[in-house]
Length: 208
Image (cartoon, rainbow, N blue to C red; front, side, top):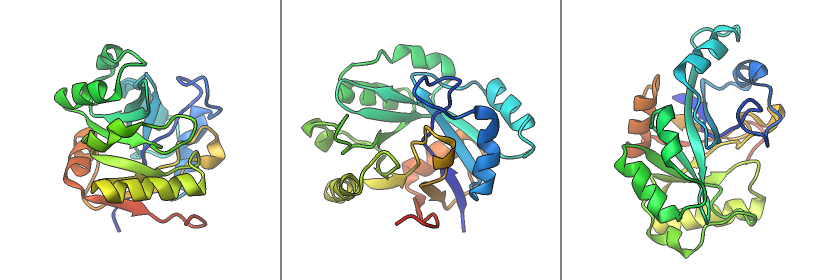
């Protein structure tokens, strides 16, 4: 068995839409059997210093805590992994998704289409030609029929898939997760694994 990560979640410290107290986050993740978390706030990326402080005060030394960010384009949301926190400012919200995907990848990031078939904030037909490293096909914010549509879309496009919680409530952390088949200890490791496809959806107890 590889390392299990929740790749998409938000805290109240940096996302106004989240109710998650970040001081409780790592303990919850450990109790859910996760090896790591990737924080993906809206248009903000945690610094390494912030994350180290959170791990140091969690009671779980050595827990793997990483950060990307969630970008809201004019049509669909993009999870961006592998940039420095100060680079987030270059991503003005509301720009065309294909333009910002290309920009992120040119800067060295890997990108996952967040909840691509969610009725409230879907992508349009441009996603058919956008070279995402993966599509997120399950989360607590995708209804069952939206999950099925997302999986079919990924299959039709030949894209790899991730499953993550998109948690905004503590109880949802780890509801869905992704298993990495190679060691992941850093963002560079995560980025390489997403690029090379050494990951798969992880079946969490109680989830299909």
